[in-house]
Length: 386
Figure 1 (cartoon, rainbow, N blue to C red):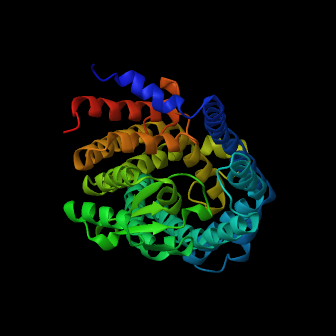
Figure 2 (figure 1 turned 90 degrees about the vertical axis):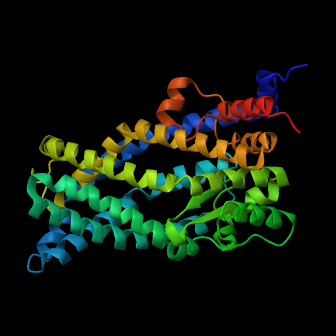
């Protein structure tokens, strides 16, 4: 009897049960609506900051200081004020809702303390970044968007070098995978792929999320593969090997660099469009029609945010292509399609496995779980055991 790909795929997905599938669909749809509501919140915060004149008052107090201090201070004040104004929304969307759906067990105070740490780091890095952007606006004039986009790519690359070693450990504890059959298998896979075994870590992802996940981060000598303790605690050996093979695929295929280059393109396009639309949008918010004035920063960032949402399907398409390639790498490396399928089903608890075509194209950074399980079953059908 020939292997029935569709029946095997349906068995994996339906195995979650109707209640779990309905909850996953509701959670996913809610996340998509959060994007729209988040945009409206951003518009309100932009309006409040512009109309209250907080940034203008900051600029007035620093009128005798140099350009760098003025822009740095205005940028830092903007980020802190906007985060404070958005705090109720952040708590609702990032903690309360996640708790209600069982996606996190993180205490509220830990959520807030980590948010405060992230804000401190972001304020420092963001303010230096904006000093460079406003310098480009003043010096490069009409071509500032070109320089700004290129500089953004450089910043992303630098963060990929610095982030895994110096920033990520501030939020999670990264340790070698504990001794045992899992570690032996993972290290053997790393050696086979030519990856230093000290580049594979386990981290306490359960601190923030109950999601079954792993990731690859960094570039060059700072690159590393990290597997959440949730995945290691819940996964079978075959699932760990299949997922690790997927992450090794990202590492070996250079997908991180795809993200860097796409960032440059999208940021350049966003800055270019924002430059053209700035005056009209500034009038709507009651701001100065001068993109080179740092007190109009909220308008610039609001525009970039809107453009980022509009261009999201493009970045999602590249991401889905990379995820498909990484899945295929895993099949070729360890040939465990059932291990991959059962691991993917665990991610369907927080990602609707059966979205519509348009929904998947607009919002999904990964191919749907159903599509990926089907690909695993197709591999299984075309590569019989033995």
